[in-house]
Length: 267
Ligand SMILES: NC(=O)c1ccc[n+]([C@@H]2O[C@H](COP(=O)([O-])OP(=O)(O)OC[C@H]3O[C@@H](n4cnc5c(N)ncnc54)[C@H](O)[C@@H]3O)[C@@H](O)[C@H]2O)c1
Image (spheres, rainbow, N blue to C red):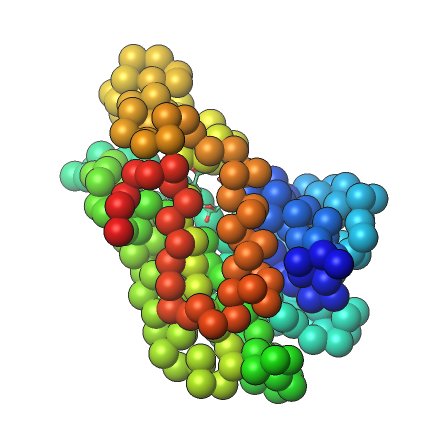
């Protein structure tokens, strides 16, 4: 039996990168998963690839996590397809580095809207549904938010809005846990360090443009020098922990953030 057998899961930002890997692994572990993303084509493609492997089912759906109606539609779709929503991964996120003194209001607003407001809306719409559901072994549902090492330590002044948004994700995680754990809804987050995804691919080039390193690859190498495990992560390094968080094995955990960073920020 899979570790997430029969659970209904939504993953946002699932067209590629970590979200796609998180969803794929959960389908392999028996969950039925909605792969949701602004990139509708990518979401459908990721879902089709997972469904082909099974044993869980998968479907793609477009969503802009900044939009409440679209987020609610995601939750409604999960319930109409599979009867309830067990796990909501608020994973979609964006970044665009700027020097601290040159950080614009526009960039601040864009990043905060996706990374902080998007998580708030995802929590609200998922929790409203979860509150209507029966408990299974004391649990009505689980919220899992994607944080970052820079949400624990303001280590990089070139990503101020991103860092603030991820500190915000941890605040939302703690507040959600305080408000809803008594109702059988757990709220946790995980914090990746440096993961080789398209996000970092783009970020790397943007950091070079800001004068961090001389050529592409330098910023990632510089950021990775202090990883105790001696290498950056791949999305597959993340999915063991995210599957644990989605599974019943983590039922007694709430309000926590698990660092999956190969040893960068030590608790
Ligand atoms: N890659 C890293 O090193 C790293 C480190 C720490 C945290 N994170 C976080 O992990 C999460 C996933 O990152 P990734 O590296 O897989 O990124 P990625 O850029 O590869 O994938 C992000 C996905 O989110 C989608 N997306 C963006 N804005 C959206 C919106 N408004 N609504 C719906 N979907 C939207 C994109 O289309 C994309 O498919 C993000 O929250 C990111 O901040 C990444």
